[in-house]
Length: 341
Image (cartoon, rainbow, N blue to C red; front, top):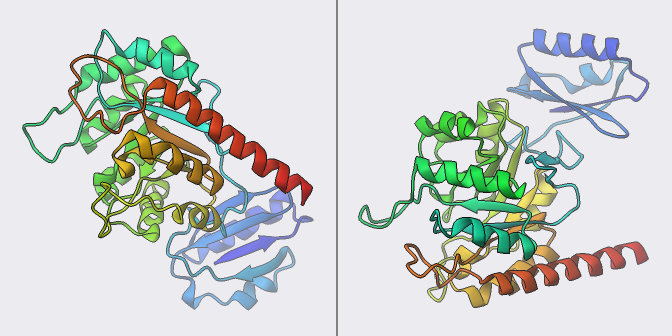
């Protein structure tokens, strides 16, 4: 349930309202927008009489919220959330976020590859220090050393860095190492223990949709994180399992405008793992941009001779540069059309 507070209400009146709601056994979430203040009432509100709230002088209107996700819902928070990822990089503020993802990390090549990625238009960097694999015998990443290397490169280039956490026990280590954004990958998208653990930090969280997860599953995963007190959540569409066999997953571009409608959280897209081939990734990135994504994550080739991970889907830095130009062109065209309307 949400209660819209009149603009004329004072802070003292709002405080009395919150105190009364808490006394009824409910939690609250207050969202202060440019034109109105919304009080989200969290709990089993089926027994609460909305007419009682509407009778209060400072309440303009009351409505029930049917969605099970509350904190992630746009009903509770009408204005778009902007996540500060550090190094003066904001996600969700209207700018285009471009994450260059390096699946393979080595001391001798990572910095050079990241320099090229930044020159190509990347505004954030992602490295796979821990690599979740289907086979226990496949390359598993550099581990703790990779976190140090990634943080060092991020500081060197003044760009935020993202790393994927796999275990609840490692979350404090990511914070300690100075990782700017903690990613919860598709394999852990419905791991409540891990979601709660990253929710106990203040570090921004990039939450990827699971390959068999629905849109509501992704929003409920965000709710797990936010329910622990961390509001800095970004959603990521990375493809779902379908009957199609030509690609690893089917990139669900439908999810982007739906997520933007249902939630106030920033939405990114990750098409390279869906397409599984570099040649298909740019068109999918363009479609995500046209659909309203706040940013795109693209896997970029480190161009090292002994690649220890998958490289068929990684873009060269030249491909990344042309893709960024195309996405900015789409953004510009959409902005022009909107202003003309």
